[in-house]
Image 1 (cartoon, rainbow, N blue to C red):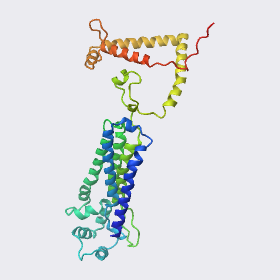
Image 2 (cartoon, rainbow, N blue to C red):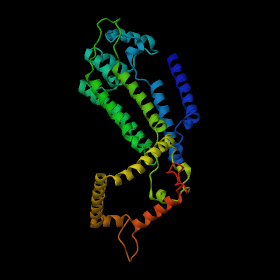
Image 3 (cartoon, helix red, strand yellow):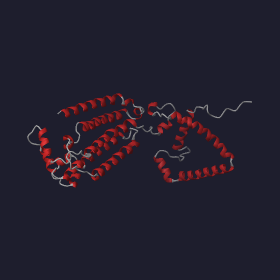
Image 4 (tube, helix red, strand yellow):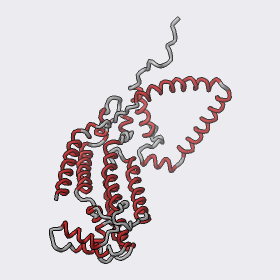
Length: 360
């Protein structure tokens, strides 16, 4: 009872710290632009679901760890069955042991069953009455971890659902789950388990309990990393964004980019080099001839694309037709003209441009 009370106090303390951190620290993470790029209702719903999931995993780790007779009683795997039964009766309030415990003790007469106890855990040997071989216990113990991995994959799918700007990280969330699941399956089926002959010798690693704990730690940390600590993708450049006049797009719809200033500073040098290289191309005969051949090939390929009937049909279906109708320009050219006009309206002469021509 003392251990149960200590576990309950630990869980309540951990839950209180988690809830306080959730509302005090996580909204103030460095990537606060996530709140601007994700719809508030969607983000709050996912955050609430993730909080419940976090508390559930903490409850599973602290309150409901896998039961283990040898770990609980500090016994060796080679301890005789009668000695285990005597110790259990000594710490029990009843004169008889529960039926699942008796099933486990009866199976402890076989050393193979003790190795299966290490591989598949206490519940598999206690509840599967028809199991008698390695294959039976493996098939019986498989659905539990498999459903847990499927649950986490579903949660990661919700965290990276369309609209969260985290869609590109879905692979980074599902990939580790698949890799860890395959590794756990391989390890639990192939690891060598030895039973010490000396009852005072320490046990090896209880692989079922250890892998269960590691799996739950992964389930606890992976969704939190995806939701709070990964930078979201920028909003898509839709036609409305491209054609909107400068200054009409609310700033909260565009995520802040920490390296924007450094990038713009590096672009200054690149633009100057581009301006000088274009002039140098026209002065060098070989470069001028190569540039002419390149643009001639581009013009020819462009004519092929524009005269293709399938391309024209698809462009019309997308309301981006470029054929002239009744002497008017097509929708695509009209959109391009509007975009260029908006660019000219927002053009501000740069102080880094070429120096003005001196007046004589």
